[in-house]
Amino acid sequence: MDQSKRLAEQIKQTTIESKLTSSFNEEVIVDSSITCLKSTSRSSIYSMTLVGKQRSIPIILKVYSHAKYKNEVELAIYRQAQDYLADFLPQVYLIHKQGDETWVFMEFVQQVRGRTSFSPSHLDYIIPAVAQLHAHTYQLSQDSSHHLSSWNLPVYYSATMAKERRKYSKKTVSFIERSLQDDQLISLLAPHADSLLTIYKKELFMFDELCHGGVALTHGDLHMQNICTHDVSKKEPWDIQFIDWEAAKIGPVWFDMVVLVELLLGFRKDWQADADAIRKQCIDTYVKEMNSHGITFQTDPLKLYKMAYLQRTLEKGLHTQLRRIFDGRKGELLPYHLEKISTWGKELGIYQA
Image 1 (cartoon, rainbow, N blue to C red):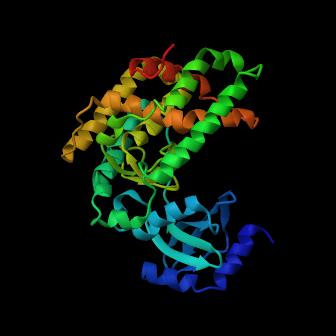
Image 2: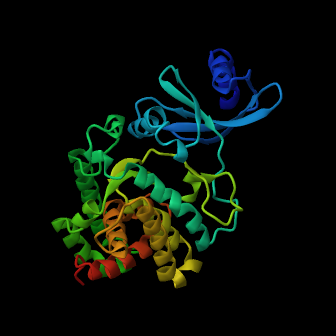
Image 3: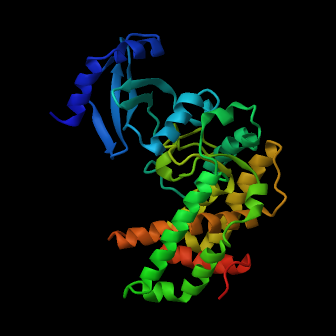
């Protein structure tokens, strides 16, 4: 029996259908045709249909494995923040414990990816929602009386995450040193190795301005597979739902922007000739929306953006690309990262050629 059929039988043996009936205020049953969209050791995602008397309702079931830390982060969002963040999440219909697993039945929302020929102008329809998310929780982590503190989300400036950053730095240094012994990588890494090793040794990639520039709830992984909307044809800001919150944390708001914008620029070589203009437009759109919520930045936003890119890339981005290469996969962004670390690092005084 395959996984989907087994799941359908499990659902029939529980009270799930009656609970979903209560959630929808109409009698529904789960159609036995269930499709597995994705499965990893951490979680599995299924699409299914609820059948009512007069309509069929597509929904998503996400099954979380037991005792996975990143699962707990996303579950905290769905369990404790659903009402407060309703404008930014798919609707959750039911959270059900099934043995060691947690099953979350939620609204089916369509990812942006693959639904339109994506151009830089589409970022103007997404970024306002990113700014609204940040504005909604801006600086609240400093207010112990606010219920955000009860969500138990990772905090970027905590001792725990500082320890994690040091661990990644050591691994990245090891990868850089290993690259200098690799025939395929030495020509790419050698021009940057001394500067990079100095940056890691002196921890030059932590910018105080990012902390002072504001912290909020950040998604942490804003690529097109994690950004959903009902209608991509509108020529105005879209209604956005964010999914896959496992990297969420309370941290500098500019990290979300560099993941959304700069990583796209890295992958989309056809955009790179216009990168400065695209970057400026995206930053202007973000700042304008934040300003509309009464939030201003004392440091030049473009400088904050570059700091966020350097800090995030030197913390994890470089490590990710090198690890992928040594695992026998592609590290497509490695040349882009090295060029930007060199250029912006010199500009901001941390990269010495």
